[in-house]
Image 1 (cartoon, rainbow, N blue to C red):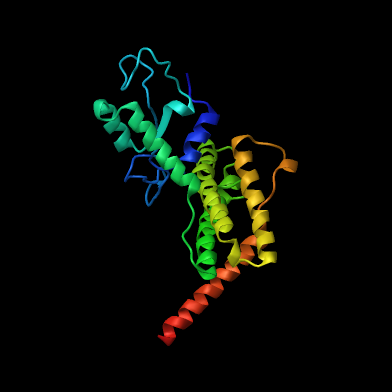
Image 2: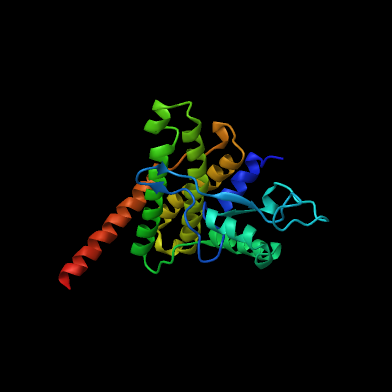
Length: 240
């Protein structure tokens, strides 16, 4: 049985493309200086399907679906399968649940309007880089429109970078809406609608009429606010 595209998306997206092992959480799609973009992630079974596999339970119907999988780096995948008595299924499920929960609830810690603008701007910049390098309008897509590797990398970037960052931005905005004017919150809600429809689209592609495009006005507002914050910080440093 092969892992379905749906289960792959759930696994990579909910783990934000990082190892679920505590104190690890290494980026599983790093860009290396000589090798370029590299996929390190391994989709490990919590309960082994084969009789000879780690944590196999004869009375349990193990399969290749999302509930029975955990995203790990190669080191931790090897470790849990080599020392299965030290890493029982219930422990691996707790690793997965704890990490995915932290990803889902993640929000930047801010106490001022300037910190809010800068935190959101940094996340948007990371998303912009992923989109410009690998998205459908990127140079790679234009020069190699039939490249399976490029398409796969874009799919992983959406799941491991853009969607987790969008979730963090949405939570941060909602938690700190008091720092925004009424008009700014209006732009923020347009981004929130976009982020939620984008994530839904990635999980189950739909036609253009059901997909809300990225609100450029929101990005412009955040960039302007972040630049102003940096200017004030620089001025304060010079005065000091």
